[in-house]
Length: 339
Picture (cartoon, rainbow, N blue to C red):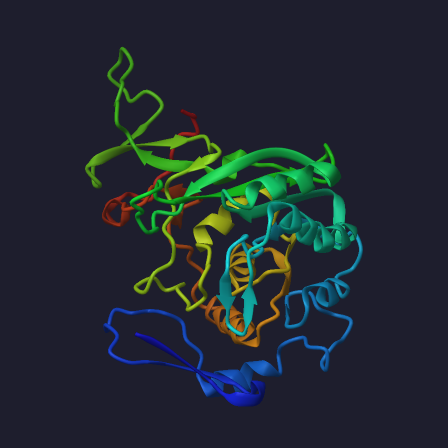
């Protein structure tokens, strides 16, 4: 059970674990962590001209004002969905679709000046917020697709379909943009292992040590290989809407190059910044809640030594629940044929 003890007067947030399994790997912050990392945050009282690769802890629009014009290659937005939700000391309240669209547009427009003409934009949402998000994006940028990903988790309902998917809108500033599908191929088990006349695998590769065959498939806009972070995963935090590093890695690899700049103004527990760091990108990052901003800094520190992204190995993304096969698989090149 995760216990959050909030001190009065906005002092610090102490987190402690009681009765948790020894396998629990949730990243927590202590009072010592908060004291150590607080001075590293960019705050209204601690602002300088260089905010690249730092975590800005302040109001989103104020923080965006610190990001230089035309400096961003990839904008990743994961705003609160149109739901009643508590984020540490901040509570988001649901509203009409019209009001949500107006709210979205009010802060989205000021961000456009930070984007290069070649920049890409991804916006996370759910079925409630997607219509509003699309309507705003179509007014100001070029909407290219909508990704739907299986969230896997979700409560059942007696009066509705279980809500187990979310959307990610894909847009660009112009028709001149970077996109590399070869960087985000999915490695899947072969369900129909066809062979050619010579008996050789057709568009797939055998792996005798792993005891199975695999095919690299072209990325689509339907993602079913993701796992929402949970207690036994090394990336897990106490953030209520944390995205998987594997999901963010797909966006970064497909739509940015090594050394490019990624901007996330709703950083949360730091997933975008951490994943960008692991993949050799720079970042601008804003998170209004100190509790989560400190978690992000701690994760960035951990990423100095632990660079792996769960589910991404040898330059490809693997299906869910394939850890056993991956450990036995040979480290050999895989043909580049697409499904």
